Image: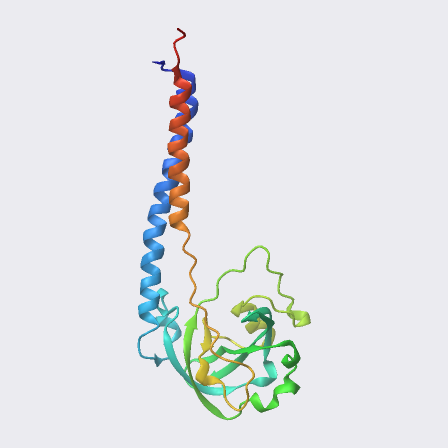
Amino acid sequence: MQFTFRLGLTLAALPVLLVLLALGNWQVERLAWKTELIAKVEARIEQPAVPLPDRASLAEASDYLPVVVTGTFDHDHEIILTGRSVEGQGGYLVLTPLETELQGWILVERGFVPPQFKDTATRLDGQVGGTVTLSGLLHRPIEPGPFVPVNLPEKGDWYSVDLAEMGKAIGRDLYPMLFIADRAATTGSRWPQAGQARINFPNNHLGYVITWFGLAIALIGVWFAMSVTRRRG
């Protein structure tokens, strides 16, 4: 076998190799960031619940922060979020504004209801009145994916949580984070079923690292194979 350096082949392969290595390094950094984030959130949700922070003090560390809120529900402005499932059963999430004494209105994710209990009239015993104290997690809603339908406030059709849009629709200045009530918030009725917080951070970065660096190694192999010729006997 004889190795022959091919300038044209090298000039074509080198930019691609640099891109693949850059993507691999970027995914290594993302893997470290995501691993640290998951560890922080898992540690945070185990902390004792604290009073609801004032709006000015909210920060990244407020996401998934255990808190306790006290206030009165406004069931007349309940919001039904479409396209949710629990244990394979399709249904809805019930979101209800709660008026607190110090922080104004906050939107509470009260829990899941199956289709037969979507209508408020079918679960009147779950429409808790008077002052209530709830524990749960704060959550900053994420941007919906490209396949999630657009909200239609004028029709009451909601597919993703948009606190600014929802606040405008119900005429309430909502707290800038969603409150997800824990299981203990289910009172008076089985529905809505609280405790639907999902601490699930996809972490596929290791697979991406392997993919990009694997492609880089494969490219080097192809370049080498094309640079080697066999001598004929």
